[in-house]
Image (tube, rainbow, N blue to C red; front, top):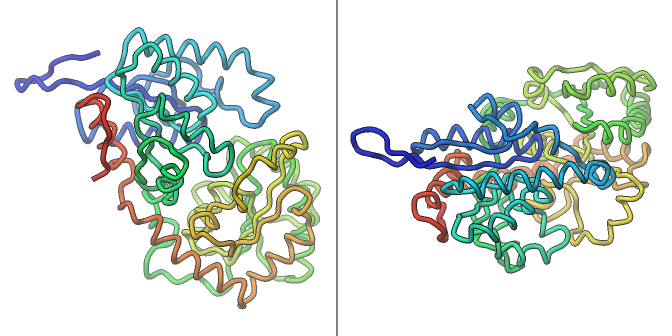
Length: 393
C-alpha cells in the first residue's frame, strides 16, 4: 500500500490496527483520527463501529471477537482460531509499515507472534499494556520476542513492565483524559445533595451477577437514607437485561441515558460500581465509591494467579486502598451498603478517597492532554524508521 502523493512525493504510510473489544474500538477510532492529523496514512485492520465511522473497512465482523470470560471464549474458540489465522495471513500478504495491537491480548498477541515469525522486520506496537503486573507476569518477558514497544494507558505500567523484563514502554495517557473536563470541570462545585450512582457493569454476565446484590444493597440504603436519590446510567446494548433485573428490586432508581451520564457524574454524591474503567471515571469526577465484583465460579478458581492486592484502578494508580472493594462472596449486600453509607456521609472514609483522587488526577495527567496524539507520534516513528525503540517525546 505504499504510494507517492503530491509534488513533494510524500510516502503514504500503511498502518494495520487490530482492536478486539468495544474499549479497543473506541481507542482505535481516536488513534485513527490522530494518525490522520499527524501524517499521510492509510489504515486497514479489524475494528468495530467507531473505527468504521473513521473509515476502517474491517477485515471481518467485529462481533466475532467481542467475547469475554473463560467459558464464552472456549465456546467460540474454533472461530477465534480461524480469525487469528485470517488476520495474520492478511498482514503477511500485504505488510504494513507498522502493526498496532489494541488491547485484547489473547487475540492480538497470537496474531503478532505469527506475523513476527513470517515478517521479522515489521514493527509491532502494543497499545494498552496487558495486565502482566496483575497476573501471569512471565508474559512481559515473552512479549519482547514479538512486540517492539508498548503504549501504556496507566501511569504505573512502564515501571512495572521494566521490572518484569518486558519491551520498552511509554505512558501515553488514558483515553479518559480527552474528555476529563466533561467529568469534573475546574471551578464547578458539586451540589451538596447529589444522587447515588449505581453502575452494575457493561456486559450482560456482569449485570446478571451484580444486579441482585446491588438491589438488596439499594434497599438497605433506602431505609437508612429515605430521601436518597438513586440513578443508573444505562448502557444501550444491555438495557433490556438491566430493566429485567430492576423489576425485582425493592426500590426503583432513575435510569439515565448516555447523554446524561457525565452531568450525573459531576453531580453525584457517591457510587456503587462494578470494578472496571467506570471506577477511574468516577475517581476523575471526584465521586467516592464502593466497588464490587463477582465472576463465574470456574473463573474465581484462578484468583490465586493474581499478583496484586487490588482489582480497582484508582487504588492501583495511587498505590494504596482508599476505595473499598469486595470480591466474590465478600460482595454481599450488607457490606456494600455499609461502605456506601460511609462515603455518603462526611467523614474519614469520604475524605480519604477525595484526597487520593487528587493524587490520581496528577498522575493520570502526567503524560499531557492528548493521549491519542502522543500514541500516533510513536506509531508513525516506527512506520517512518522501521523497527527501533520509539520515544514519547
